[in-house]
Length: 198
Image 1 (cartoon, rainbow, N blue to C red):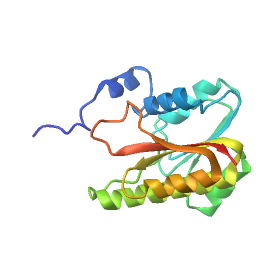
Image 2 (spheres, rainbow, N blue to C red; image 1 turned 45 degrees about the vertical axis):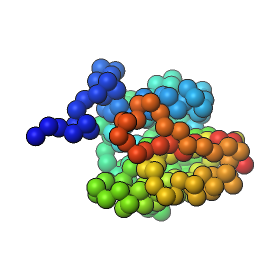
Image 3 (cartoon, rainbow, N blue to C red; image 1 turned 135 degrees about the vertical axis):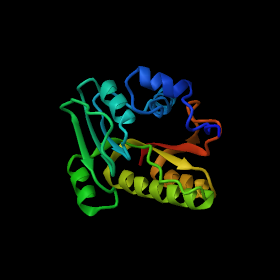
Image 4 (cartoon, rainbow, N blue to C red; image 1 turned 60 degrees about the vertical axis):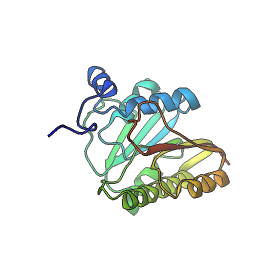
């Protein structure tokens, strides 16, 4: 039986491996940053759903020893970034003690999330779970972002995209959806970008 498109290494997967990143998702963040200017020198950044670690590694390289990155995930990272300005917490973003530990290291200039639910194969269920994660990420952004800050969150497109963007427009000067080129063509994911926290 032929492997699915997700099992075959594509251009982005091969490029990531060559450049030392554990996942192809790094190029989605790179494109988002080029388009929206999200990661700035000296920024304090929170990476929610950080495993396997490509986004965190890219951010740390971009910060070049300045600023600070906190990251959280249920899973261990697939990389061990040796940076003094990096804090990783293995835990559940819904856990109050996790939230408190991340709050101590804030406030942040940027909240990033490439988090996705474990997929079930049921598109409706998967999009509902994805929307719930984005809601939690936006809760973090509301509480921990400095005025003028930005949020980027991955969303499986379903029925809730408009409501989430409407929520973001109340808290941010601009809110929009953007699908980077590095997303697989068969994927129903997009990224919600809020900038200029009010």
